[in-house]
Image (cartoon, rainbow, N blue to C red; front, side, top):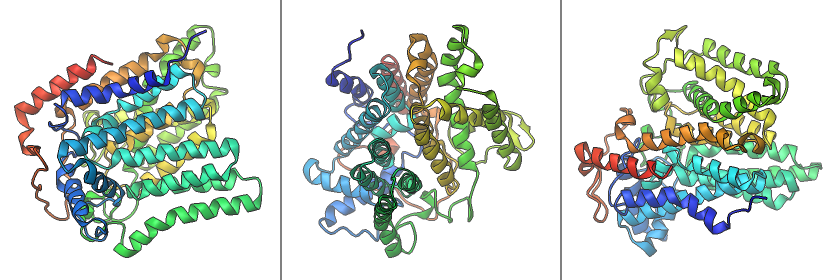
Amino acid sequence: MRRSLPRGAVAGVLALPFLIGIAALRGLTVALPIFHSDDEFNYHLPTIRQFAHQLPLPDLGHYRAAQTPLFHLVMALASKVVGLELWRLRLLEVLISYALALAVYRLLRRRLDQPQPVALGLALLFTLSPYVLGSAFRVITDNLATLFIVLALDRCQAFSAQRRLRAFALACVWVAGATLTRQSSAFMFAVLGIYALRVPRTPGGRFAALALVAASVLPALVLFAVWGGIVPPGGDPSSCGLCTSGAGGAGLSMGTPELTLATLGLYGAVLFLPPAVLSIRAGGTVRDAVGGRLAPVLAGAGTGALLLLVFPDRPAADAAGLIAAVARHFPVVLGSSLLLWALIPAAGAIVVWRARVAPAPELIIVFTAAFLAGALATRYPWQKYVDPFALLMLVISAVPAELRPLRAWAGALVLAVGFVAYAADPALHKDVPAPRAQAVAPPRAVGREPGPERTTGATVGRRARGLQLAVGGAV
């Protein structure tokens, strides 16, 4: 019988990517170029400094960032202990990101009953996503919001299993925190609403759960009412993916949901096709591999194809990320890139497949549907907005048996190496020009940080190659 690793060893393994990154970035005194990393200097650091100087009563109505203010408040409060030197604030961001890695492991291990090696491997894969690990070394809001979302999913799953309202109340607290960190996290209110209606067995229980959901919405609603919109009056609405003043204009957009599906199709095929092929070669059938009849899986693929017929996707000029960049080099067929004709129908099939075999099918279905619906309101089809959540949908769908053979991890290894290479090479993820409602000059650097203008060109190339070698050797 295989012995489990002690908790300290698990924590150490999940800490390795962050420790290697800190060392490669010279104690976080060097900037890691990531997508829209200039937001750290243009928006988040000025807001943190402003709040730190205004404590205990910061002005939540006028600040430069477009996001809701919880992240900046947390950092401002922490700065009273650690100071405002940039490397110290980045270290706090690393700790937040490390907590996210531990939360994903806990969700997989304790709530979804994954064996320890599977839970650890999948949590490590999630951590290595360039939009998780890359964001860990810059002072930006993404990973704190994702941490709150993962904690909320953990509590929702506990509520489903135990039917204790206390677990659901905590889920509501985490979703409120996520929405007060990033407005785009509001899709989680739909998740809460569905669990509130489905899990309690009595009308009184449903009423109490729905009351908790309503209470969790209130803080964000009050803030938006005070602002007169979803962005603070002093913020830049063009840096908000949900705002109508950006490039997308008014109305809903299919670009981001389709990018989400393309990401699901790519990662799902690479991650889960190797175990399926191994199962079939060992004597199983295709039907066994996909959890039952093929017709629903094929219907999912057909739905993806129909979506592209109705809403073609080339992708748009302002789409950003590896999938969009590669898709532009493929021929356009019936208004859509040929690569998306492969990935989006594949995503439809994979979503049906994974929902059928997952340890917690309801969690997969509800979370995926809520995120796709929320993505309709996201103006900018940028992979950074969808990548961690698409990967999270997939890792929580894993079946312990399919990843038991070591060879079944071949796809996960390919993804991990690709993630690290992408994060470490700035040439692969240059910023795309995004419309700005107002010109925002970079502020003075905090502490000893030389500023973004000192980390470009040949210097960035050398540092990125060093990081790629350092982290790549650990994968």
